[in-house]
Image 1 (cartoon, rainbow, N blue to C red):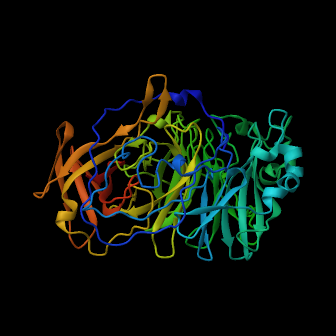
Image 2 (cartoon, rainbow, N blue to C red; image 1 turned 30 degrees about the vertical axis):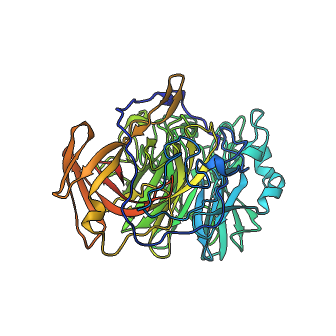
Length: 560
């Protein structure tokens, strides 16, 4: 998705380096998903706007057909461990920017920017699909585009259909697609389309919410802003990035636990907002009014749930599980070196307030470079260890799904340290830790599941590569090489419950053999999480891993 972002965001925080260890897994039991298709690759023509959906051959993925690395060489040439178990995995990749996931009739679908859609039976092998929007988009939105969104600097709608989200509306008996029609001066709108089937055909219903309101270039009279605020209302605040100037993009539509329908939306600067929708029409519920209160709500945009005061932030996504609404946001600029990253907050109410583990609010009350702020739990950084042949960069604009069996999946797009602006979709399983926070499996989803009764002690004791996902470091490609990549350090989970490791790391760890839950304490911080046995991303050797969270920071371990 092509979006405007501040050049100042491109500063970087350097981090201390650690050493990479080898990778050797213990014997493993259980089975993992077996996807029969070969790996395909990323967009061959994707630019900084994230467009393009062409694929490449197996070598583009970084995994050769024998499971060795074709990119960074971390696993290249390694002989397989005869005593270890390997999963038979063959991922089929797609490039869908800003993927929004939905499950319908037993199949998983993702819908993204630039009319890119895909489906999968297992979240591992994906196939590109098409619907009527791919052919009809030029005529479907003609009135809105020509009379409000189009500018001389942005004359073609082709690259301006962004980040759709789809929900099944029980009242309407329709699949409702909410999609951004982007304008260059934030003269944008989120529109509604409906279909009887998830695959379409989709019918354009109309706009849900607008932004811009520049009365000379983008007439406010074309929008519903005066219908909501009253004729002649003062629109000054909607032209100030320090106040309420947002881009009406990135919708996320969800039912709350009482059956009310809500839409979160917005991007950068003015913040992320939430409106109540009318389930009978799928459009704005005009019977609901909001007051205009600083850092809290706006009479036109509704409740403020995140951001503001010119901080970065976009791609809101909300799920409900474990008694909480979890809000995902993407900070930073979406390019490989732009610092794009996923942060998580939670609330007992869908309208907020949303806070992180340390009580920091998702709403900002003053300007800041939030890439260097510790607000929000960062699910993953750019990192380097032997179990992943790629260094991922700018992971973000995610969606998430609570599946029928209660498992939770994170679906996002990622760029890479050595592929310019090419991108692919990745899926990780999420777990709710002892403190009620989400933590991500260290490797991409491979069909793994948590055991009911935990693991034997000899399975979990031993040496691990250890990653700390720092909140204030991000990947950048510079003339001096790549910076902002967290390198793994070696630690040992000892049988006596102590932790020892590289750079004088010390602490303790604990677990119970009747549960996969675990905790690890390092430098006085206790991280709560899970052991989970799963294939790594290089040779697909099945290894013991752990994922945990403490003091707003996520940590991962992968057994050597």
